[in-house]
Structures are given as C-alpha cells and as structure tokens.
Length: 461
Image (cartoon, rainbow, N blue to C red; front, side, top):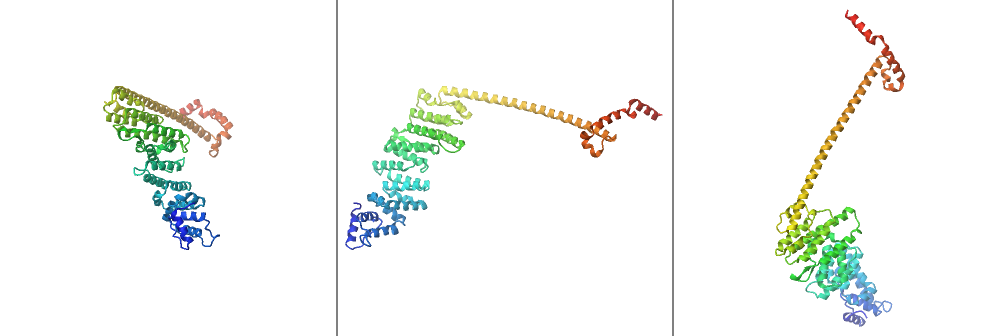
C-alpha cells in the first residue's frame, strides 16, 4: 500500500468529514494512496482523488519550487507515481522550467539520487542545452561526493552519474569527466563505471588540458603515483576512435597534434614533482614521445620535461639519467633545442654527443640546401637569358621578313601589279600576275645595268 503516516492521517481526516491539508510535501503520496483505496468520483462525488489531482494540476505543476518539493517527497512511492504517470508529469514540468531558466538547476541537488537520475535522463532525451546538464551534474556530484558524505553514498552517486551519461559524450565537459574519474579512482568504484568514464574521456582527449590529467592519482601524500596505465588506456581509446571521427582530414589531424602537445605539457607538469619516481617518469615520457612521433612537429616538449626532471632530481645515478634520456631523439628537436642540449651539463655524455652530431648534421644540411639553391638560382638566370636571346632573334627575323614583304608590295603597287584598295588580298587574287610582273620588271631596259650606265654618262655630258 503506497503512502506514509502523514498520508493516512489526511485520508482519515477526509473520511471524518474534515478537509484534508494537501501540500506539495504530501500531495504525491496522498494521490497514490487515494487511488489505491478507490476514492474516485464513481464511488462518491467530490472524492479525495479528484481534490488532490486538481491541487497538483493547479498549484504544484505550474510552480518550479512546488514541483521540485513534490517530486522530492515522492521517493517512497515513486513506483506507484510512475505507474499512474504522475512522476513523468513532475519530471516534464521540471525539465521545461530548467530549460527556460538554467539558474534553477542548482535546486535539483536536493533530489534523491534515483529521482535526480530520472530528471537528467529526461533532460538529455529532450535535448536541453548540454552546458545546463553539465552544470547540474557537476553541482550534484560536488554536493554528494565530498569528505562530509559517506564513502558508500559517494560511490553510488558516481556510478549513477556514469550510467545516465550518453556514450557519444558531449554532454559533460572533458574536465568534469576527468574530475569524476579521479573520484572514481579514489572511491574504488566498479570497474565498469571506471571503464565507462575512461572511454568517454579518451574519445575527447584532444579537449583536455595538462592540469586535468594531473589529477589522476593513486594513493595519498608522498605515496601517490600518477596512474600511467589509465593515461595509456585513454590514449589507446583516442587513437582507436580517431578513424571513426567525422570532419575533415585537416581537422582530425589537428586533434592528433593537440594530443601530442597535451602529453608534452602533462609531462612537463609532473616533471617538477620531487616525489615522482624515475620509472614512472620514463613511462610517461615514452607515451609523450610516441604521441609526438605521429605528427610533423618538433618534440621539444619532451626535452624540456626531461631537463626539468633532471634539475629537480639531482641525486639520480648515471644509469638512471641515461634511462630517463633514452626517449630523446635529437633528430625530432628544433635547432634551438639541439643547440641547448649540446651544452647542457645535466645530460649524460652520450646524449650530449648525439646532440652535437645532430647539430653538425643540421649545419651540413643547411649548407647543402643553400648550395643547391644557389645553383638552382644561377641555372634559372642562365635559362632566362637564353630564352630572352631566342625571343630577340625571332623578333628580328620576323621584322626582316615583314620589311622585305613591305618593300616588295610597294614596288608592285608602283608597277600596277596591285591597287592600294585590294592590297590586303594580294596573296589570294594576284599570285600569278605578280610572278609575270616580276619577269617584266627585270626585263625593262631602264633597269638593266648597262643601259643605266649609258644614261648616266649622257646626263653627265
């Protein structure tokens, strides 16, 4: 039988002819009890069920605070309330009002866990803005997972929140997910819950920051260790889901670059921890180097982190220093980093020698490229000059042809081979006549060399 002592008290008052004191705190249990007892209009007009139903419809559901209070009081009878649709009505009212005024979501932290889970699932289903959902979840976790709350209660909250989050992610920011993952590690939640959080973080690892990853700790105080295996699993998830991500190739590749930079920043962040063991740092450095190897970028961040670690851990043996530096690849470092490494007294001699050799090889490569560029420039200039000379020769030849043709046409006009108005059609209309006129021209006495000399002599006399 649904209901509690206060609900039975109001039923008894009603049966004795007194008006029941219906409030937001007892309305839902009283409704469920009246329905169970069959106190309907068919049995008696103006019965209790109709009165409570009208109060819920007119006084509770239109008000945010009244609805939240009524829904909170329904935990003991939630199954009966869900069966008649009253729970769904309260949830729908809460979700619609939260969407219109996101500042109200803070009030939802007062809801019992299984009631809060119903509200969050409905908010995600109805596509309420993700930032409002994330804000509500973060506030709820902050309130119920704290040193002032029992460990069992906090564990239940983390596992419930993980269940209600969609697999595709995007509802809760990556930083909030990592915070929940840290709490999950501390509270030792079920492996399924932890795996689910790692999976959601891994798929969005390119949106995380170095400080977000630093929170992944095991143990307390100086016994704390960075959870290398957790970071490795999330990296594996990110690269495994890389091929399934939508978007352009350029956008996806930028995600790889961001993760590589993230790992280098994370390594530099933890390198200053004096309690960090060399073995743990080496494992993290290998992860950072592996992340950078798949991108076309300098791995100066790894060198920077190693330099910080060696500075903070001056008591390392030569063997330990060599193990820490074995992930360094001077060929993947920028010229400035290589030059710095070549004079870094904190590095083992082997690494310094490699840096010097890498610097020399870089200088040789620069000189060789400069020589090739000089030869290529000289060859290009020579080719340009030859091309210009060829063009000039062709222009002269064309000009000569055009000039001879022009003189010949003028001669033909003078001797009547063509007229000025049809000179443009010479090649098509007067080819035969021109050949004949050429022969006539050369046969004229006045143009013969001997006759010309005779005329000149006569004129001189």
